[in-house]
Length: 269
Image (cartoon, rainbow, N blue to C red; front, top):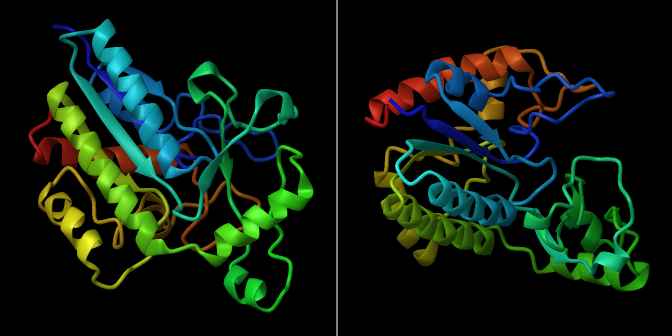
């Protein structure tokens, strides 16, 4: 019997290379690795700290097509942890990229895409409208004048409805690819998604996803909130409600108590 492949993608909450003060707690110890061991399979974890949902889906599409070409008949299970909708991307010319000592990949598969987040403040909207600096971090040392204008414009016109609609549309197409290539999967939020009111396009794309038990409810369930509710200790320097990072104990429990039972429940293992 061929060993299954457990494929994982997401942001820092799924990234085995996420570290605090150089302590790499999660090497070979994320929830994906636990599922891989349970199924006596191989694990590929392509999660990347700080990335956006568009990158998660795009790199998943690339990796899954590549792996299916390499292994036409292997059982593949994809575990996808979605991230903050506030994040987006920029295309950065290679000569403009400065060296950074973090986990942002500069591999060929990432091309020239780089994550952009216009603010890390909780009160960014109020500050923006009151002409207070929203403190966008210019990671790649791009032209400060235009980077600031772009970030403030992106913040001003930001809509969680637009982000959710595009995310749900992307996921609808991702599922079609998974089914075409015979890929099993579970998709969930790592940090909880914002609760939104009814809107036609959002509701239209959400309807089929809501019926698919391979998806968790984005607005009512997340890995971070689950770990917090289970009283696991964060590995971050300080506790941040709903968005803290957790260590191998939480990942192991999440795999054993949530993911593996869900894979059984959905008939995927």
